[in-house]
Structures are given as structure tokens and as C-alpha cells.
Image (tube, rainbow, N blue to C red; front, top):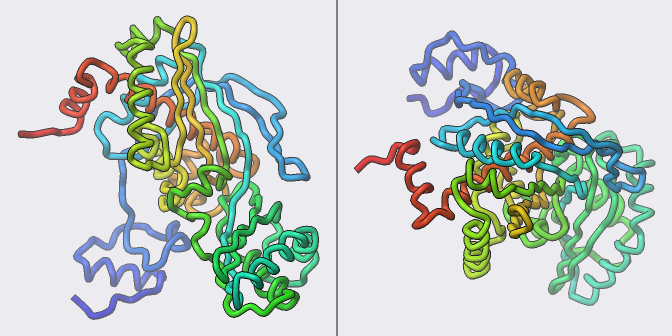
Length: 397
């Protein structure tokens, strides 16, 4: 094996890498060369589909950056799930069937913000506090700077909405909070945050600044974090369903009381472990939808943070799940690749103006899995959960 592979994405370099690795030379990788460096092949993951009945809201972003519902309609949605987890699609479909018999899922987009967590290291805590107050008092000036500055690297799609500061020791952490349209927006907001740090704060700061960091990890980018669990990162979405007694008995093979008992035990288990989420298995559904539609897979870490609830009501059980940080996009990045774009089109989510629809579908799909998996765990001794994994998961002695 050579010491170095060719690193370019031209056809000759791709062919040489494939030959050196013993791969055939027939793959057409031209559609993928702008998506990653040193492209050498593609990973093929099976995609299965589930069908969900969802009451989807139509949403717009106001000039002030608030998410406003403008309409609502019930739809039957076909959801692509890319995974190799035996039983996952069947479980999603079972939860979706119980929901359909109960009137379907209902989804709500609550907020839309994505954050870059910068940091300015000052001489001492006093200077850091002075800087924090100065930055918070000048949010209007910072917004005007981004609108008016003649800087080629700036993105006009990333709109600064608020700023939050946090001082610890000599460090002034700054959370620049943006909206980024139909793209997830990390590249957009990184460019704008860099300009704010270097061309707005540094030249005008009321105190000396020893060091500036574009990202200092206070928010928790691509990781679960208390900050994002509370304030959101990306799209904050709630999905809910009121399951009827009949659907719970016939489809889920359990009772509202058993589901309530599992919710009680599971919530306390989550608290005892210090878990950042209170949910059953949201990452499986989020990751499967992300893989099918060209989302950034690293963002499953933040996007799968969730807070589920279950409550016995007259005639059944109300279940909901809140995702504070769905980092999703319908333009840019992997969404432009052939297969992801095709699956986004199946969802009615390809291109501009579709990101809030897509975020709601992700949340409803995850709730379908939560309902089904929880029902399997709620049976006596969790036997149904065990059987599902034994029969579909390839367990061998």
C-alpha cells in the first residue's frame, strides 16, 4: 500500500485510489465530488419506508425571527428510513398505525435558532464582565454591521437575532444566535460570527482582548448539552398524539396504565443517570431519516436530544415528544446529492420553503418509534421488546 493516496477528486485520482484499494473502476462518483474530500466510493444502506398520518402545520418566519403558523392540513406521508437495524421500520410502522387509528400525529414548530459559541479571553473577570455588557447593549449595532459591511465572506442568509453572554473567570463566552433559512446553516453562521468577532468586537471593544476563539464549545455543537436542551439549536419541534384505548389494545398490545408505569420508571431512571434527554430511543429514527435525506450525520448528537411525556387521559393516553434542536436542512450540503434529493422529493421537502415541514416529519417519525418501542417494553417482563430483538435483530446463542 502506498505511503500517500492521491487527494484530488478528479477522475484520475479517484480511479487510482480505487485501484490501490482493490476496488473496481466502474463506479460513477461524479455527483459526489463536491460533497467530500478524497471521494473513493459510496456506502449503500437499505432504505425502507413507513407511512404516517400527520397534521402538519405550515409555518413562516416573521421579520422579528418568530415562527408563525399560517395553516394546517392532515396528510399521509411516506417516510424513508435508511438503516440496518432489524425491526426499526416495523416498529415505526406499528406506532404509526396506532396513531392513525387514534386520529394521527399533530406537530408544531416552536422556534428556529442556530448558535455559534464564540469566546473572548480578557485580562480578568472585571474586563470580561465589561465586555459582556458592551456586547449585549450593542446587538442592534451588530445586526446593522452584518447588513451593511462590505465583506465578501458574509452570508446574507444568516440573520443575527440575539446574543447571549456568559462570563466565567476572564472568559466572555458569546452565543451569537441566527436564523439560516432552509439550510442548517453552520457554514453561514460561522462566516458571520467570524466577521462579528474580528471586524466588529475586536476593533471596538472597551477593554483589551487577549485571545479570540470562533467556537469555544459552550453551546455544545454536535453534542447533547443543557444549553441547547433549553434554548434550542436548529428547529424546536413538538409532536403529539392521543392514543385511544382500542388502538393501544389492538395494535400496541398493552394498556394506558402499563405505558404510564413505564413512563414513570423511565423518567426517574433518566434523572438518576443524569441523561440529557427524557426519551426512549429517538436517535434511531432521527439517524435513519438523516441518512436517507443527506443530513449531516454528526448532527444526530444534538438533534436526537428529546423530552418525551406520557399521561393517561379519558379514553386513552396522550404522548408527546419535544425536540429542542433538530439541525435539519432542505437545501445545501448532502441534500443536493441524487438519492437524498429523490427521497426529500418523496417527502415533499426538496428545496426552499420546506424545512419546517421536514422538521415536523422527523419529530412525528421519532414519536411513532417511541410509542411502539415503549409499548413493547411496557409488557410484562418487557417480553415483547425481547421477542422483537430476538426475531428481527439476529440474536444467536
